[in-house]
Image (tube, rainbow over all chains, first blue to last red; front, side, top):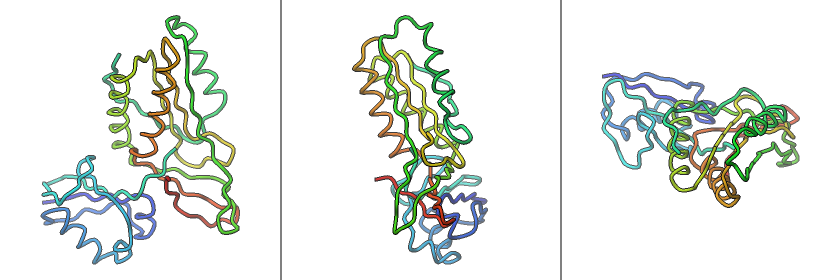
Amino acid sequence: MKVHIMLFGQLADITGVDKITVENTLDTDSMVKSLQNTYPSLTQSTFVIAVDKKIISANTLLTDQCTVALLPPFSGG
Amino acid sequence: MTEKKIKNIFIAGPVTADFIGKSIQNHSSKKDIGGHSIFLGQIRADKIDGKEVAAIEYTCYEEMANEKMHEIREAIFAKYNLTCMHVYHSLGKVATGEISLFVFTSSKHRKAAINACEELVENIKSSLPIWGKELFTNETYQWKENK
């Protein structure tokens, strides 16, 4: 199972990556935990998560080829 | 009036006065319009810890932002009696004094256009996945956060 992860704004800045593909990740909670192990700076960051462009508010099961985006606080306008 | 097609609101660089002028001109043939309301977001030269903002560099999650904007657009059209609604946001670098957001609503009578414009601006700022990096005159930067 492949999951595509996108990082934006300061999250891409502090990790140095904006796109990662991971295998065998079950849900958003375990995905975030594993990302924070790889990129410890993410533990200090504020962000919301969008699965296939919809913002989620609780742990969400992931499916093959889905896209998970980590979105820091918005600052458009 | 509803529009089903998802529009792309993003343009590269600043929104120019020429572009805004032409947008207004484009409505002269729509004779049922009685009022327009326009909001223009301009880059402010904020001073933060002795450093001055020279420009903001915008990035976004384009697909999600356009889909979310589509939802906002549909909701605003359902709530207000509008003739027209146009939204443009800059991507990339926009210098202080330049325009990065252009929201333009038109209606038969002024109140709908004015209220819809204000609600759109608030929704755009709070709900669209867009990020601004404040570039200082001394070449350092910080990530902006909407208040």
